[in-house]
Image (cartoon, rainbow, N blue to C red; front, side):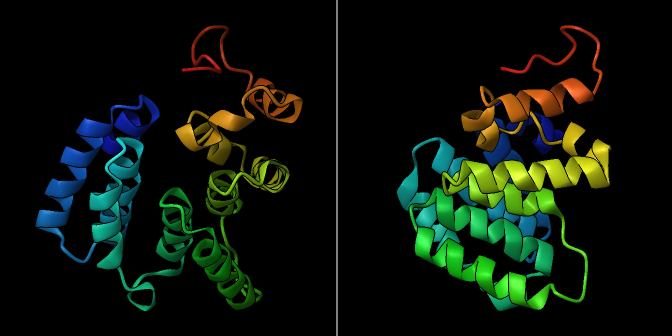
Length: 167
């Protein structure tokens, strides 16, 4: 949870330190390893991000981790791999629930703003609290001025100034 706060505050170095420690304690933790990729990428450390990304094996990851991996591919400039993984996940999720927020992260990272917004609107309709925990995520920075995004944030009825729309 601390990493989530660091991420939303854009404290990439603290995020990286957190993920390295979690990776040390739990080497098979997919979220920590994928988060490490995202945060290295945010700091412009593409070589290190790519090296960590190369250690991940999609079939060893849970469905949620694989959705997050699609976001990592997008951050690392590998949109084809991101979209291919999304298609694969779409085909396999027909029978079960999948978080629209996870997919919104990936589409936002790919620059597909409308698809990201549709998924965020679905997430809000399903579970408003899910949007509350994610609306400040840096991956959504490109959506902040969009009236649909602003409308979703306003529906959270947050106290004025409590969580600024722009970090």
